[in-house]
Image (cartoon, rainbow, N blue to C red; front, top):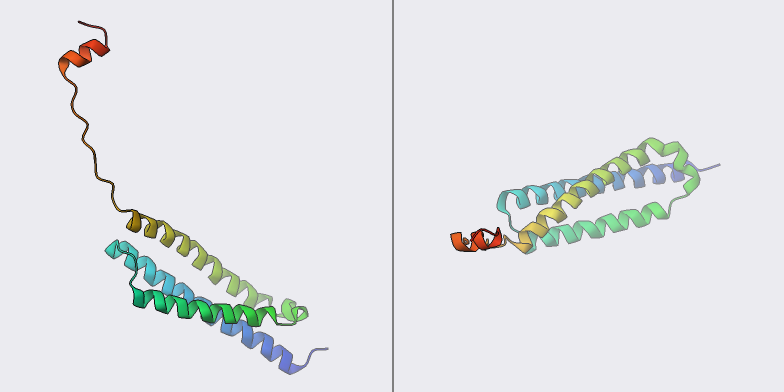
Length: 128
């Protein structure tokens, strides 16, 4: 049988992970707005915030991995909630990657092809 401390630890760890996951989603959402509004990659300050949050997310995942998995069934609703936030975040991050790719590649300059002369077109189509 599990002790109340184990149950609290399991629930608290999942609650903390959901909080960090929601913060991650909000930061990715902010990045999405920046990319759409400015068309520019995020600045160094934003990237530093993202890196700090990533460290917190990794610590949260490490804490989850250390939990007793036999308790997982009792907290399925919290696990589902965490997975939902993570999936939303991943989808939005994928969109951000595409926007970032557009930002970094830039717009290709249009090359104007010279207009063919009437004589050239007649030669192509066999009418001399």
